[in-house]
Amino acid sequence: MMKTSLLAMAFAMAVSVPALAQAPAAPPRCDGEVQVIRVSKLKPGASIADFDKAVAMHMAWYRSHGYTTNVQRVGRVMTPQGFASDQVVTVHVNAPGVPRDKRDAGWEAFVAAYRSVSDVTSDTLACFPKP
Image (cartoon, rainbow, N blue to C red):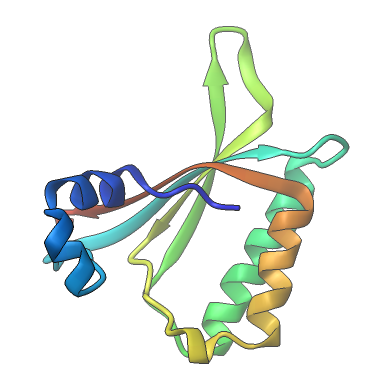
């Protein structure tokens, strides 16, 4: 299960309790690029190659559904001893918001692929200035 992003938590804490009762909070408008930054821990027996397959399925789904301006980058977590063998970071640049009614069997397949090999340990939504 994905953890609530730090940004969403900070935003929710800034809103008064009566305001929360009125309507769910929406993230602020981003005039730059929305980026989703996640740290994932690989499950025992899973490899970076397994995770990369889930990323490929994810991006293939976006392209097959007409989303063409987003890019997902995968990086290895670095430690003083070298690269962590059980952690990866993904940065989803210009991540489109996909409405729930557009999430089909292909969507469920790549989500299942991620879940079979990893658990998200950190999930942050950020707005970066356009390059």
